[in-house]
Length: 292
Length: 292
Image (cartoon, rainbow over all chains, first blue to last red; front, side, top):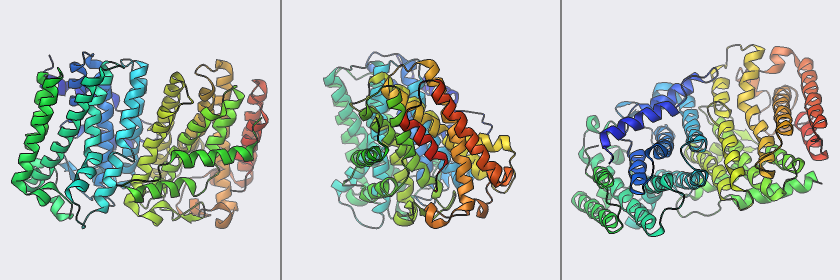
């Protein structure tokens, strides 16, 4: 059975191992990549992938590689989102954002290199079978791309200062945050086997959608209720940037209630489909009931 | 036999088909992607891939997909390179750069989405066999990543205003431009077959290295000798940005002579390894003896 603190340590070790350390031509960019990835983070996406892999009877080593690929995509998106032309955030994980620490050019390039590194890690893995690699690359590129994370970020910026309705806000976050969270669970399953049983895989994907939305609702809630110190990034930045948020649209208490309802529904899917492992249940709960 | 003008038309059609056109959440980003890719370009990398595929006895349809993936990577790099924090170029292909036309945020995101789209196109292709897809993804992500294109761009920016020697300048361009040009030829071979004959593949890769360097030397030469109008991007920008260039280091005439020598050497590799198809010979020549 997966022990989560041990697992977190294994993820850190693996990230460190997969990140290049020395380059004769691009050392500042490599340093920026390592700063962005190793500087902190909950490692939620790799942990999801590993727990999902376990639920599908797979080997942890395979999921660690694809989990790191997910984290590289996530890290690249944070670097680019923090740029002055985007959300203009100077602090991330309680430290200077990558462009503050290494300059904008190195930050853009470090993000680009992490984006490529995600695919390099999967395709070079000795632990994943070829058929799994292809499905993982498909899920990863779809979740990151124009109809997923990047598309959602586009709408997020474009909609600053104009009011979205709840359907639009959900569509925004299903793309911006939800797609990669769902992909984490799906990629975990494909790390275990190239042919996960369709009903269990569907239930897992649905749970991913539910928890992705719940995660984002709580992200908006914490931005209002927590301090910069606890968050490791500027509290109240949604308000300052005139972002559309769930608390603004639904109210704070109703937002929390909705997040809890989504968590329950996700848990039900797990229980009904022989997926309710201790690790998955705990990680889903942590994604919602968290302090930062 | 490949007819190059026909092929160029097929590449344009394919690029257009693979680029998303409509999005309910991210239309400006999609418009920026299409502007960047369809706004112009020599299509050298897709043409190389198609010609190389032909030389290895493959089907053109397979190479068109992987050729477009190469062009998406190339286009993303141009968008990001043109940003104010990087080379700060306002004109590209005789038109406003992507960030001038669509704003910096959309430009960054359009680049990111093209990066993902390259992998989506390969993995979703019905024309490529699975074993080829994996090798193509490996070549593409290696060429784009930290030890390739992105790493080279890092050094290019970092070295502005300080003098590189010839060895360093060659290492810079082998990474920044050379890696993706060599990958174009290699990916063409893997589009034809997952198991290209090793000596022919090696000769092709070597020709790719030689022509990549010759291409970059001529790029530097044209920046000095051509007008902005003919180039479609600002002439003299290397000088203005204090870039390290081959003409500055070797002199203008010696640079041209070296480019011709490299072209001859590349052609010899093709002739010696049953790769001297009319299309490959013509494309290699065009890469060096060009006006822009």
